[in-house]
Image 1 (cartoon, helix red, strand yellow):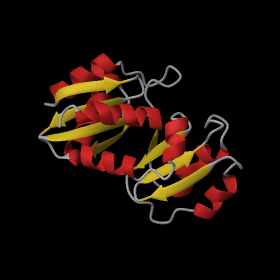
Image 2 (cartoon, rainbow, N blue to C red):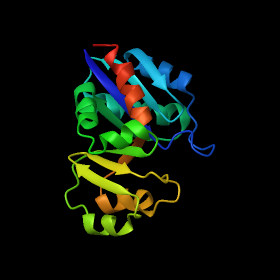
Image 3 (cartoon, rainbow, N blue to C red):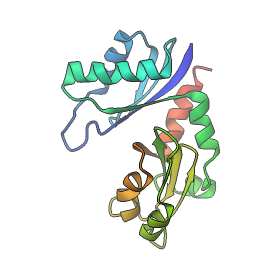
Length: 180
């Protein structure tokens, strides 16, 4: 059985695309997932399943659409890939001192032609970023709310992305490690 991290994009934001986490747990269990645990309301789950990642990801999206009327972007990662992303963090000191200031943008695929020059031009003086494989790392000590870099990075990367801060990523990792 594989350990998966489920990251849903754009749910429970501003009163739109609501999906209570208790309902998400039931939905995932109905799809045959086991030991389902969720973290905060932004669509993070850890679970075990014998299904392939692509099959389960597709089923989750379809089932949410059937039950709730919207289909969020679903990113499913195996624990080893999630752990590899965490280990690659180019801002470890910043993540330790300011876990809400370091963000990981998990991408569906490696961007074929990311416009890194435009992304660099958007960065504020305090912001730094690095693209490593399928993860866009962003250190934004002043927050992402007004960051032009954060607001435009997905478009300039050209690949769908869902973002989590370091504190959330670390908590999800710790939850998943309980299955090992």
